[in-house]
Length: 128
Ligand SMILES: [Zn+2]
Image 1 (cartoon, rainbow, N blue to C red):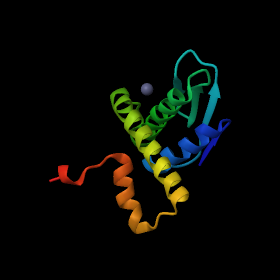
Image 2: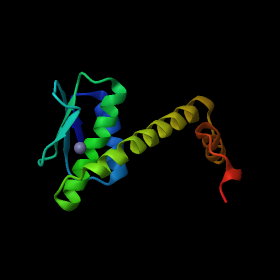
Image 3: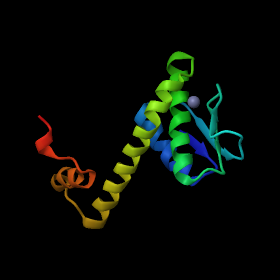
Image 4: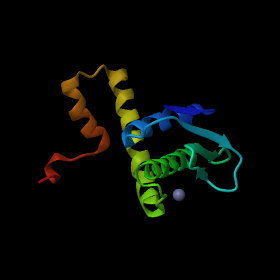
């Protein structure tokens, strides 16, 4: 479970938590910092509150990847965190967008996959 003093961090953080299969409690605290974020070895994460929302979001993804790494291996690995942060954030944005359209348009489950392809610009014919 994710705890936070920020709605953004709570929503995105909870999604990333599920996506990565993190276990136990994680605290994401937005505070003034001299860096984008920090991940401590006790599941405590700090995010710089002075960043833009998009920057905060990417930083939250980055630090949660670090916490998952620490849970799995006991070490923080920087390259994997940098490579994964944007992909994770984009995936979250896409899922939120699809969920919104689903509510707005009352899509059925059958429609959902096809509409999602259109929203995300996935072209069937290119996949062979
Ligand atoms: Zn890092």
